[in-house]
Length: 486
Image 1 (spheres, rainbow, N blue to C red):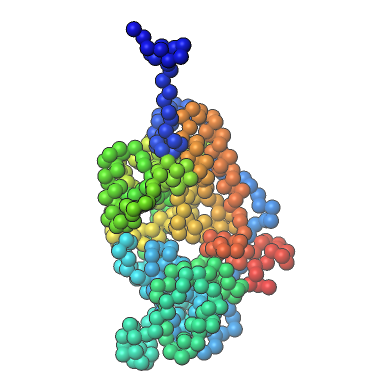
Image 2 (image 1 turned 180 degrees about the horizontal axis):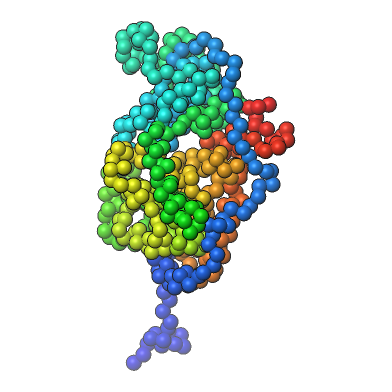
C-alpha cells in the first residue's frame, strides 16, 4: 500500500540534494581532472613572449635618486635600532632607520637583527648585506658606523640596557621624531629604538622619502656570497629556458604548513589534515583559534580570496593564462605542506619547474641552508630577474619585490597579481569549461599588465610604489618630477 503526498505517492517525490555553500569544498582537483584533456590539447601561442603588452600612457620611468653633495654637519648623536621579523620586515626597519637618522642628523649604528622564534635565523647584517657598499653609498647623506664608540659606552657602563630606549607607536609621523626623539638624542648622545618594525608612517616629507629610496634601491645590496650563488642560479634558469630565449617566470608560493594552518582553510586531506592543522595552530598560536565565541567559516574565507593557493591551483591558473608546459618556472617557497602529494599536479603541468634546491648542489647551498633570511634573499634575487613574477598570497616578500622590479624595469612591476576572489568563484564552478576558464584568466593576466605601472598614493609604501618619489619619467614634464627634486 502506497502513502500519498498530495497527488503523488511518496516514492515518486523527487529528492532534493542541497549543494554545499560556495567555497566550503575544495573542488580544484576535480576541476583539473575534468579539464586536463582540453588543457593539454590547447596549442595556443605561449604567453611568455606576449605577456607584457600594455604601454603606460605616461611613458617610461627611470631611477633618479640623487646623493647628497654638501657634506654632513656635526652629528647630534648615535641611534641604535633592532630590526625584527623576516628578511623584508628587517629591510623595512633598515631603510626607515636610515631615513630617521638622516632627518635627525644622527649617526646610525649598523642595525642589529633580532633573533625571532619563528624565523630562527641568527644572521647578522653583514651575512645578508654588503656592509661596505651600504656605508659607502650613504656616506654623503647619513653617517653609518659599525659599533658604538667606547667613549660613548663608558657613560652607560658598557651596558646597552642602560641606554634610554624609545617605545614608539607603529606608523609614527616623522614630526614625532623631531619633537620627541631629537631632544632626547641631543641630551643623551645615544638612544635605542626597539622594537623598530613599522615605526615610521608611509608618508613623509620629500627629503625623508629620498633617503628611503636611497637606502632600499641603491645602498642595500646583498652580500657577495648571496649575489654569487644567485647569479649562478639565474644563469642556470636561463639555460633551461632556451626555447623561450632565456625567459622564465618566477612564482612566490605560500603553501607551508604554518600558512595553511593560520588561514583556517580546508583542503582535501580529510580528518588527517584537520588533526595536523589543529595541532599546528595550537603550537604556533596557542588558544588564538579556540577562543569562546570565535566562529571560523572556511567557505567564506575561500570565497573572500583569503585561502593560500595550492600548487595545483597555481598551475591551473598559469596554464589558463596561456603559459605552456614548456615554460620554465622558478618556484620561491618554504617547505610545502605535504609536498609530494601537493606538488605532483604542478609538476605535471610544468615539468621544467625548478627551485633553488634543484638548481644548486648541496655543497653550493650548504652555507645558506639553515638560515631562512639568506635562503629568502636567494629566492628574491632569482625572482627579480624573471620575465614575469607571480605573487599568490601577499606579504612583505612580493611587496618589496614588486617595487624592486618597477625600479629595474622602467616603472613596470612585470608582476601577475591574480584576483583571488575571482579565482575562488572560477575554481568552485563545477560546470565551467576550459575555453571559458581560459578567457577569464587571460583577462586577469591583462589586468595585471595594465596595473604594472602605478603611482604611490597616500598611505602606500614607497618600497612597493617607487614612482614618482624614487623615479623620473623619461623626457619628463614638470608635473612628473619626483617630489624631492622640486
